[in-house]
Amino acid sequence: ASEWGYWGKYGPKTWSELCATGKRQSPIDIVTEDAIRIDLGALKFDRYDFAFSGSLINNGHTIQVKLDGVPIHLSGGSLPSVYVLEQMHFHWSAEHTVDGVRDPLELHLVHYNNQYANFSEATQHENGIVVVAVLFEFNNYDNPDLMPILETTKIVSNWVGKNMAQMRNKLIPLLLLPKDHTTYYSYEGSLTTPGCQESVMWFVMTEKLPISEAQVNVFRHVQNSNGTLKYNYRPKQELGNRKVHHRLE
Ligand code: BO1
Ligand code: ZN
Image (cartoon, rainbow, N blue to C red):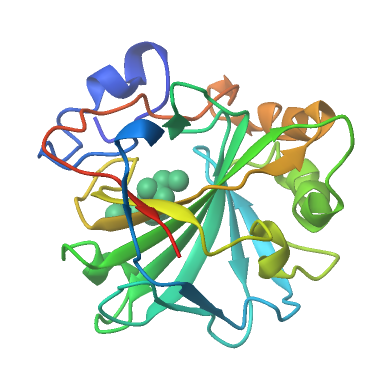
């Protein structure tokens, strides 16, 4: 079957025919005590500070955001190339855990290596994709920087895979990164959904951003063809021989 989901008869235990199964699958639990402290250099977030119009789609697996206009680039931090922002999307709860703690939300900013023609081509190469992951932890107040995305999520939450909805307000991607966007954990892994291609350099930001319970509930009410998409995280995968690096200035 090409159908997949997060629980029951389409859950991650049934993904084996859809997924690569190598030694660098994602997500993982990040054990901070085991992370190797090293100067990996700062990431350069180019044009992240611009205000972008864009649109959202409910693809039945997540809420995905596409921005319009000029390309947004990520480089530096020992990356071999320049990476182009393809899309961003959310997982509720978080996919990466830190010392076993699972936060309520994780944002993925998905980039592909500009040496390749497009995202799908880049997933065939080991340095093809960079995902920057931002963890959100509960706070008593709404996070205003999520407003452009959340107000549009409410619109698309019951139109599965149909149409894109334009955001009413512009989005500044830099505001979705923690203030300290130069301290991160990094490791070599995979896409966390089928086909789970082992093409991803992961950068999990150390500093977390706040989100209210009411805001997380907007995601928890997203619908797909089987009902409510109550959660959409893949369980942790074996670390194996891999090392997690922790950027230190
Ligand atoms: S993630 O950041 O590892 N959760 C991730 C997972 C999958 C994708 C991007 C980031 N992209 C998906 C596209 C699908 C496509 C598939 C093939 O990749 O959303 O449309 O079929 O590689
Ligand atoms: Zn993701």
